[in-house]
Length: 151
Image (tube, rainbow, N blue to C red; front, side, top):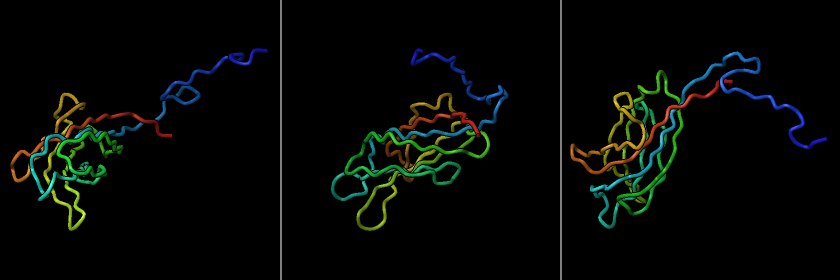
């Protein structure tokens, strides 16, 4: 008697139940904050900023990246997963770049927004950051819209 492959394996299809009927799916957003790039605004007297990013979707806080000490450019590669009401492509994203301070409140360094509905691609996008109308650098993001099964 063979140990492996003795029985025919049943091939499962994604998106259908065991009887072959379609199942309900929904879409989620995977948002990668890839990097913080060339920040020119200084909020610290000594050294560079300690940057982190607060992520908003439709004006609701989705999360924030971990602060990185003393730099104006850094690779972050942090993932945020969420479900948007309605069509995910219409989700308006906003990003606030902050400077982590050990004493007192954290400083806002700049902010920017991203509207996926008007973009040709959602991968490797630069979000330009401004402070009081002046360009201060950018962040790199990638957004994926993925279907998932509802079980």
